[in-house]
Length: 290
Image 1 (cartoon, rainbow, N blue to C red):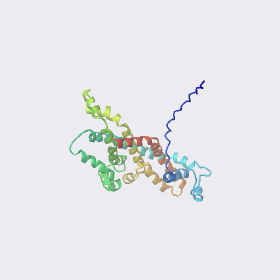
Image 2: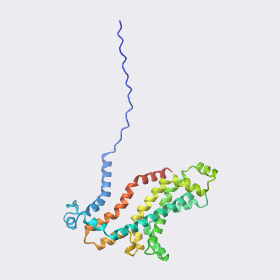
Image 3: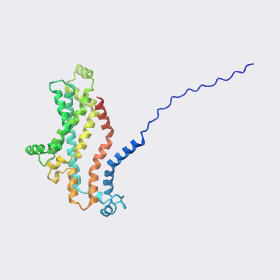
């Protein structure tokens, strides 16, 4: 009598899971150093606003002990601060709308139509990326003065729109080129005009790039200092960067209050940029792929 051996179960070997490859310790150390260099001054300014002048004098790199909220409370209670916030918001929103609107229309023409001089026009906008505002500040000052826009937000907004267009067009043109021609042909067969195709199809499909360029334009306008310095002379029309300079000059002895004013002026841009960081990266990635 033969004894039948029970068949053994053959366990299928599962394919090893993809293990996350970690970088070398040197890479993380270098990244940590760069992060510390970027965030260190910001954290110092914010914490400095919670201290008083004696604490800063005795221990410049120390933590608040005790925490002092009076500096931030006095800045937030100041009408001048909120007036400058409003001026910066007006300039930022108007600049963003102008840059996005004009940039999207110009990018649509450069990406979807063939005409003489298209390459030269695109190269001209690309060359604008290498033309800093510092070089053009004197001609801009003369032009704004001749237009009668000195000491007004319009004199700041219009040049900011002009200097924001090159980045906007360079980002949006690849998005619009990536739209298949079949969609435009189908829209024309259905009786949609070119203007209708632009609003109904182009604008929704290019929304990631539009959001990216809008955020970049707003943050650049919010942090703009050189152009408002030359154009604005009345403190009632100051934006926040100029307000920080004026406040630092007025309260040069009160270092803690100056730090509080500075931190409050940069927090809105930091929050705005942090909230939309993924959209910026996604928009730039789409532009590169296109």
